[in-house]
Amino acid sequence: MSNNIVITHSLILMILTQYVFSQSAPPFSWVRNITSVGNNQMNTAKYSPDGKYIVSISLNDGLTVFNTSDYSRTSNNNSLFSSGQIAYGLSLTPDGTRVVFSHYQNTASNTYVMNIPSLSLNQTSQSTSLITMQEFDVNHNSTKYIRCGYPGFEIVSLINNTVIVSNPLTNSNTHACKFSVENNYAVTALNGNSFYVYNNTNHNIFQYKSSGYISCLMWNSKGSSLAFVVAGSGGGVYIWDLQTKIIQKIYYNVVDEWYMALDWSPDDTMLAFSVRYYKTIVLNMTSPMKNVIFDVSMPGYCWEVDFSPNSQYLL
Image 1 (tube, one colour):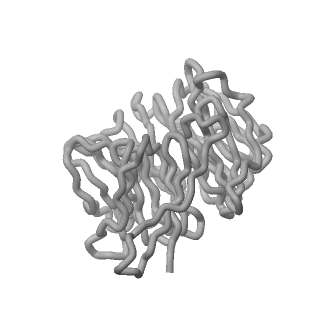
Image 2 (cartoon, helix red, strand yellow):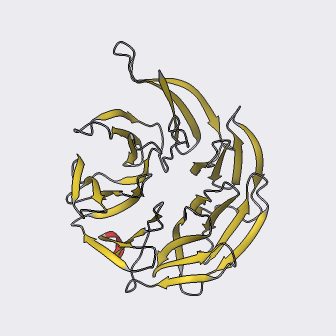
C-alpha cells in the first residue's frame, strides 16, 4: 500500500512515493518534477477540493491551474501581475469554484476572486482598513472568507462582496488565519506572539500568548483541534484542544528554527510542515509519540505544504 506525496518548493513540484507498510523499502521514492510556466519561483500551490486541479502562483507567471490527471497546464492568468509582484494568501473555496488571493503593489489592499479552472475574474474587494494582507481562508460553506494583515483582520462575504467583520486587534500584524469546519476561526496577533480563537458568532473564546513567534495555524478536519508552530523560544509544533483548551507540544526543535507552512491531512493521520525554508517534515498523528515519518531537506525554499483531498498527495 502506498501514499503519494507532492512537495512544492521554489521552482518545481516534486512527487515522491511513500511505502507505508514496507519495512525493507525506503520511506519515500522519487517520481517526477513539474515546472512553473516560466521556470520561475513558485510561491504557493493548493489542491482543489475535488482533487482535479492544482492552483499555483509563481513569480512573474501569475496564477496557473494544473490538471492532476497528467499535470498539464489547464489555464494561466498573469494579467493582474506586474514584473516582480508577489501574490499572498492563496485560498480555494471548498465548493471548488473559486480562488481568493492578493498581491503586493505598494500596499496589498485589493483581494481578487477568480473562477476555477478558467481563472476569469469573479470579483474584487478593496479593504479600507487593512494596509497589507498576508493570508486568506474561505469558510466551509464557501460563503465568506477571512483576510488578515495589518492592522488586524476582516471577514468578507462571498455572496454580496461586503465586509462582515472588521477587527483591528489593537494594531496587530496578523499574518495567519484559519476557519474550522464549524466556522470557528483562529488568527495570530500581537505581531505573531499570540493567537485568538473566535466562535461562529465572532466572540473571542480563547487567547494564547507564546514566548516565540507563531508562524502558522491549521485546524483538523473535525474542527476539534488547532495545530500551530512556534519559532524561537519554545519553538516546535503544538496542538490546542477546542473542548479542553489544553495545549500539547508534539514536536521539539532548536530555538532558531523557522517555519513557513503547515497542513493537516484531511483524514487527520498526518501533519506536515516546512522548517527553515528548505526542509519538509511529516508527523504520524495516529501514533501516541507523533513520530516523524518523513524528514527531507529540499534543494530550494519550501513555501507551502498542502494535502490532497484523499490525503495521498502533499504539495
